[in-house]
Image (tube, rainbow, N blue to C red):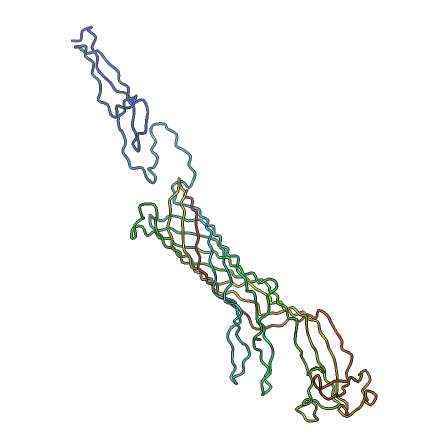
Length: 411
């Protein structure tokens, strides 16, 4: 039977939560009740270095969806719809040289062995390609990720010089085009760009190669998609031009004067056109091609959800090519002429009888050659004569190797 003597005993009541390292603890309050012997008992405590006595209540590993534990009516923190979803954003910059130049394709021969198109070798590279990429990725597992990206590559160009096709005729009268050996300076244009949209897979290699002290994790990636390659119009100058039609009067030689069918016939009217001080603009175009990228690098963990990749990448984006159309703008001189019957026997202009509209002109075979007379019209000069022609396309491989850095943010 209980007496009125004051005795005490201990009861522990939870008062709140605290974190100790990775573990969660619940505090306790000690109360005392009287006991028959008036003795005080204190409940055993954990981590007594804390002001409030603690008792461990949870030891769940902190990862994935269990990263944050909540007790009683504690409000859950709002960390966004994508929290712990494995999504990440990334942006990268890369640079590297394209060692494939743009040139006309190799010669094409017909069944009779006639060359209709000739190859050229003016350019050996397209310069440096600077790439910028943005994208989003999703971690499928600890080793495999899927990515979607858009890349833009700029800084490339056609080159500093170009070669043009000229029209020739063989011994049998077959007309064909061949690349002139002369290199012409590119004075404007020729910028080359490439845009790439693709998907890729990224595979972490640290399980095979290690993580180099836990800070550098190697990986390998591959991307496939659609590349859109563009070359802008480019212009070259041609100050000397060329002569078309028949032989120009200034270029006649004594061997050209004959009554046979192999030379110039007496009394027959000929026309000649000379072009000079010209510009040739090659019209560019855009083509689409299959694109492939291979990437290898190291991942460096930064603070929080940030990481940095240092990588090497090889891109193969098909070809870039011109449209095959060339706009020519020249000054043009035109003249008609013929040989009178006594072109090499007359002693003066007054002895030459020319048709109406023609005047007698004295010329020489070379600088010190014998004189002769020719009937010709006045030379007509026309400025800025434009002609659009379709010729052989020039192509180049969009293949370049790059080094770069990539910044990633994990949700």
